[in-house]
Length: 66
Image (cartoon, rainbow, N blue to C red; front, side):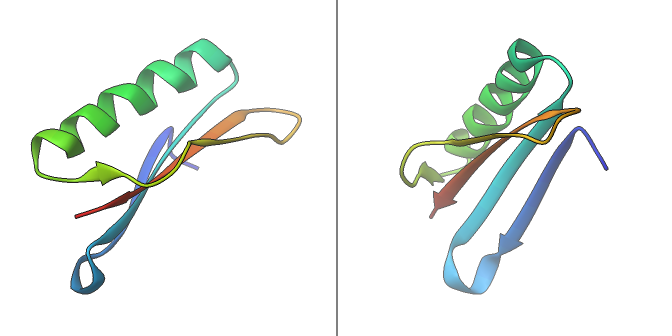
């Protein structure tokens, strides 16, 4: 699993940006960077980020729309 992942549905203007790390602060910082980059490209956050801890890593997911 990659530390930062992005799934995109360009036809519908919807994307999900995900960050994973064993350290919450690191996952949060990575996600913040990716979300900021997406916002510079015209994307907007859709709702609040979702946090999940799977026992090994913190996973933070942010949906975005264009």
